[in-house]
Length: 315
Image 1: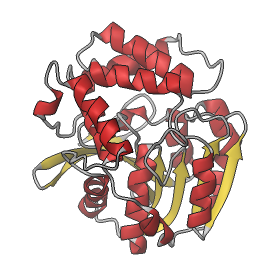
Image 2 (image 1 turned 135 degrees about the vertical axis):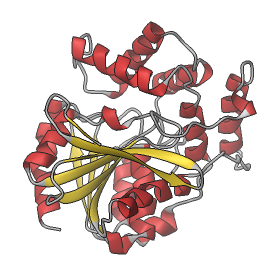
Image 3 (image 1 turned 180 degrees about the vertical axis):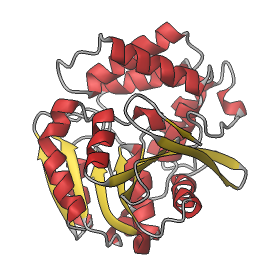
Image 4 (image 1 turned 45 degrees about the vertical axis):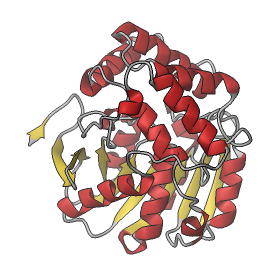
């Protein structure tokens, strides 16, 4: 179906992967070069910054975005481990199992999520596309780039890691505490969820960036209404991250020209992860941004948008 939001026309639809429905949205002309964008932990297709989508369309690209499984309008999972009274215990035991190298048994894997994304390209009859992933979406995108190299024109990896988080390369204590709080309280009120998001964004986003705006509030309400009252998918996605197999071998096999963008002050995924990724992806360039943390606010995007465009245009 075609519709017209404030600035764009877009096409929406669903694909089904073994009974799991994935909602997607496509911006721009079919004549433009497709670029598949893979969202991070808890993120929805509407959470991609408008300035990024605008920039891609203006430069003749066709952004394809989607709700990862367990978010937005895509299929939600149920799991008795996340019923009332079990949530905190489950997420705590998941981290403990990860650190002790014990099996975690998530309800789905990052590989499953990578297959979801490729099936969107199949549905749209797209043989090859550029690929961009952020945070957890970057982890999923690594699998896409490794398993489907013949379909990827270029790869852009933002604020991500080739390893699951650890005390050495993962979130700071303050960020980890807020993420745990979100996992333990998925049925909070709208206002509580907005305030919690604001606290997380202030910790992981550009220092001093104003979030007390009507735009942030409205986007938060839209996200909550699309997701519904059940926010337990956030915890299951954490399980998928922690339960994923070591990706080093896959990452070493990535052939696509890769641009790695990372904030020097990232408190969620430390910058050492970017250097490690650059080491293992042979055909990669590394861009470390001093003012950037984990997100791509307009002032941060201005720092690398020309590098991104050059990267895309040359591949």
